[in-house]
Image (cartoon, rainbow, N blue to C red):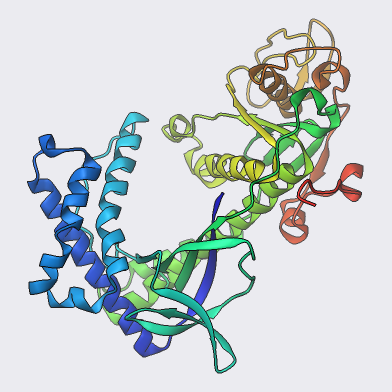
Length: 422
């Protein structure tokens, strides 16, 4: 399996200038590759074949383009091949219904990273400090706040400059060990399965009766709005404007980091604690088209949570399934009868069988039931939907997830099971 490990770099002022020089050279090469790509007729091959043709022109380019000789060759090649990745990414967005145009030339502010592929980089110790030695660039001090896994092979290193001016090194590693095998579905106990319903005020409701509150970022957003108002009063392009722009970028980055930290810890908890996880396959794009609650929907980052949960389940040997969310709120988890509920009605009360539960908990049980059906388990006497319907919910503040790393309020979390990795 492949993972990314991200570390902060501490370059000197001279090293910052060199990093920016290499970054801008790669940007110009990318723009040149895009220009050449648009000149090549489509009937001369696939996207990859046409981009490789441009990559093969690099030796000739170096004969008249002197700055290219200052950059390591294993940096120039991925820069050209990035073009193919971006074209394919646009194609996927078009398939999903997004309105996108063609690729455009990158400005200095838009092109913020370059990659050392396969070689040209090495972690070393110099003067008692850990440095990242980069060919044709520099030995840059790196904050190695956690060691790379012993059984990992580093395939590439990406150097990225954030909008705040900070530099980071992102190690793309490949693990030599295989993830643990997923247990047979028929051997999974009911208390090792969980269905998760996501929302706005309560981020998750699960079938174990735990409701995790959404992360409160109101103070961070207020600060962002204040800094944005200050930016609007600065003369565009002036030194004061640039300093204020960085403060705004710092606010955005602070919100992004806190949200991703929350999502990482919450998804990691579910992937480690259970052997089968079922979630909704939400159409977030359609929700964002609605102006009524699009800001909160975008801030919730449900797709990001599902993506994190999926790869963490793969890493832990946990079954992961996404189900159709249509009607999970209306359908009774006990008898299957559908009952219309306006959004303000937060409780489920079935007129057919009398089953009562929190609206979102009922949806979570329906999600688990559909997940079991999609996996081929079906409904049996041992299915938790029929044997262990919840009586109530336990609210967990988001702050507890961030500080403790998991919403460990349930009795099962107080004595966590042994990880299948040992």
